[in-house]
Length: 279
Length: 279
Image (cartoon, rainbow over all chains, first blue to last red):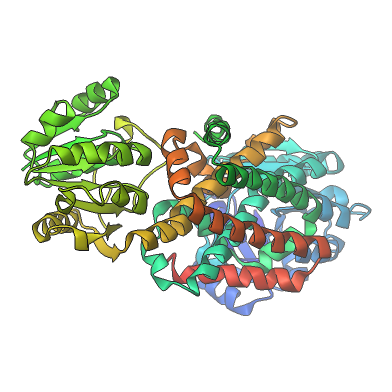
């Protein structure tokens, strides 16, 4: 089939590579407001040709929207305006605002809301990774408002990508995404700022940066354009999690202030239970 | 030479493997209060034989102390009591309390304080990793109080392990360790507790756990026995960093509450500067 990728960055680019490698896409058309991204995506073989949005939608069986969430919210109704029997899917980190943007659109049923749970801290077509999605989880959201054949096409593609599909209503998705993805980015950004604040005083500090530090701070390299939009769209859920997180940090603070080894041990023992999730 | 490893866990075990692989140690003697660790370490070829502390120190050219920091503080003076011309080094995550414990010991000059900046979230002899230290940084601390030949032996070993040595006075080390290692563990433990708190309500949440989540939370699997002692020994420095970190998180919170996209972008742009440290 012919597939259009709107947004040829990290996720769209990796998706295009996988769809071509698996023989699902005979042709990938790239749409991107950033002309340098189009040139790079052509050069890297991520897309076969470029076109403007209307032309690309017309020629395609499937359109994958892989742009920042505010842009998806804005552009999606315009994309749907040009849809006839094609299927449109998104890959956004939020689901409720996206699905609300086309709730009453006459072509709503040709849309399937999804969120493949994969990413890195890099962005742009150069960040695209081959075989990125195998073994990962993807969420399909709001499928009762989608046509059966549209859902089946998307399910089939995710199965061929080797992903496990979970179904979640949009608001539950957004709560969970705040816990398992969005808060990790906030803590990582804040931790980077904490250490950079100190660096003003002491540059030697970075000579010591270890693997543990790298692990907790690597997400702080993530793209502001993408993450500001996610944080804003999901801000109520994220605020809930952030308040809980600050109160958990305060428990550690109180243990240190009061030299309460017993409670500190209890807090860490409890944190160790994360082993049942992270193998 | 003959080397004694006191504590045959993650760091001691990995160190023993490297010293044997590089031909630096002809014989490694293991000392461990945990008899199961001794059996396991023998089985895994980490140590060649076991002995009690006094006997092991007597037979060795070099003694490496790789036990939790409180235990190091307690045991180190007793180890030094049995030292004649041997060299003793530690690998602890704190330096000031360790060096203070033997400040006035008549054999202080046979001791070299070090901290190789490597570790994982696992513990015990089974967690030992071959070739763990190559390309990493190690700190040598308080070397002016150590004999020249002792420092040279330790420097030579770290060079052969492929490590870059940085020299730092003990109190500077402890400040920097709080920033680049200890705070990462606190945020990770607290993040695990945040999410586990939520899990009481919603078990589906973990189906979605992604690589970003794993990255920021993996340190939460770390051993309480080791980390409670580190946090307690370095609590004043950690409290400074933790206060700064909570205030950085509050900036994010305030941006979300006030929908201040501009300041949020600024905070993330600033966090991105971590790229100059984490390549």
